[in-house]
Length: 182
Image (cartoon, rainbow, N blue to C red):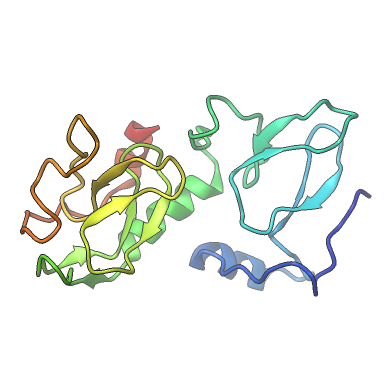
């Protein structure tokens, strides 16, 4: 076995609901933050559940793989796993379908799903602030959380209007829409 981070010293990270249910239903004590390289079997802690893992072992030369399905990574660091059976894509789709709706403070837009996938990289984002302008924490691109339209060509403003202007909320995103983003 490889290096494993002590449970007391690793940060407590909230798990997506469906992953947490899977962990809780297992017979043995499983920490989903611990990942294992499918090439050399070295284990290490992935405390923030970053999807793209790069094995730290010199044995396999920094093998790139998905934390969730453990298949070889294809694409750039801003992509998401493209494996059809990746539990992350299925869990993301479930989170989008099962999310609550919210009212956006500044623009007063009602019935906006409070969970969205970035329109560029598929990163799941939960709405926490008043503004409809969203900067993806993964790819750093800007889009409207309400209507899901991209920013203007210069990247400085939304194509649907200012942060405090109303726009028509896009419906909940689906599994098929996630596949198109990827």
